[in-house]
Length: 230
Image (tube, helix red, strand yellow):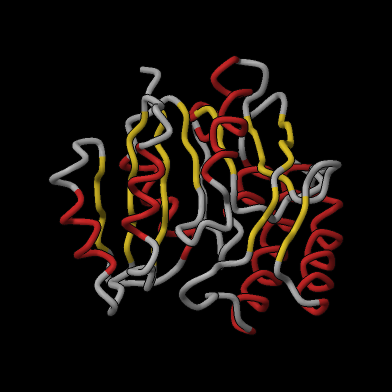
């Protein structure tokens, strides 16, 4: 089993989904693409269903609830690949970076690979100062949990064995941080990439998601402390 499973959670990505699907399969990799759509009212799920006729390795999961991280967990459960990955539907994670992030896992030199904005060679385009500050703040709050420079990245690939015996229950968006804290791995690497702000559609980041992040951090710190004092 060497296939790569890429999970893309979606909500109101009708303007992006077809181009994303075409682009992912245009990479020439042995992969399956799993779209997990949270009942998008703009028809994202219907567009993805139609594309299944053109791409046999495309699967669509329809959910009635909303939540990016929980959608990824559901996608991982349905995945068949030895390598699991997650990326956004809005092209903030550039397609040409996908093979570079997958490579350490495919080559066996790492168990987890994170697309990183905060190591040399990484960059962010299109953010205002407030969003840059809040992102850096989120990274600092997570620093005691992991040495990874960009632990809040949503662009991550891993060997599925990392999740063996692990129960993921993230709140909000930060599935990568949950994996870094709870996963079973020997080596995690960061691959620089340029994060580009979406051109179409509306960002899902809001005050509620900032609050969810605080809840998520609290749970992860409790989890880490519980394991330390066993």
